[in-house]
Image (cartoon, rainbow, N blue to C red; front, side, top):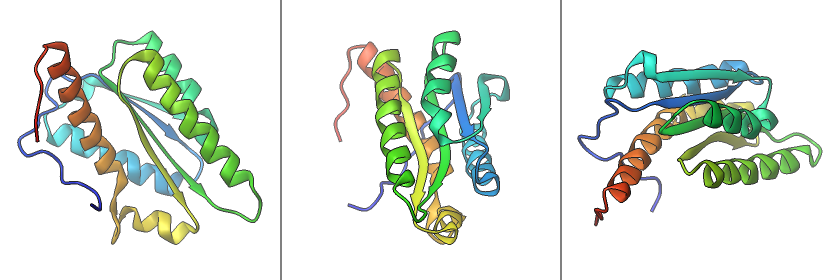
Length: 163
């Protein structure tokens, strides 16, 4: 199954969402941020309930997400960035560190931490995934956050969802 469609009729009304976004590869990360914010607002989130925290690069995403999550009462945190493979193993080390770090932050905070980091071989591939012909991963990350918040709220209420 390639990708999944967002749930129909989901609303972001009343959700408090943090977005930590890397400034490195800024043209692309700005597209991811714009798509995520546009989607959250379209689905009913309030501008006041969306907190955006820019960080220098992807490596800083986990620690900033942790600080944001411990300093604010949030329902979810989206982490947006772009890693483009170079000629050294640096890409692999950074990708591994941030993916493990973000999982750890989510487990520690007990809230959804959404991995909205593009890991591509070229800048062209990254642009294609930031609103080009390969979709929009910023939009996908926003829908994932909304869906996970609904999931957590259902679990808190002791209800199960099937499907």
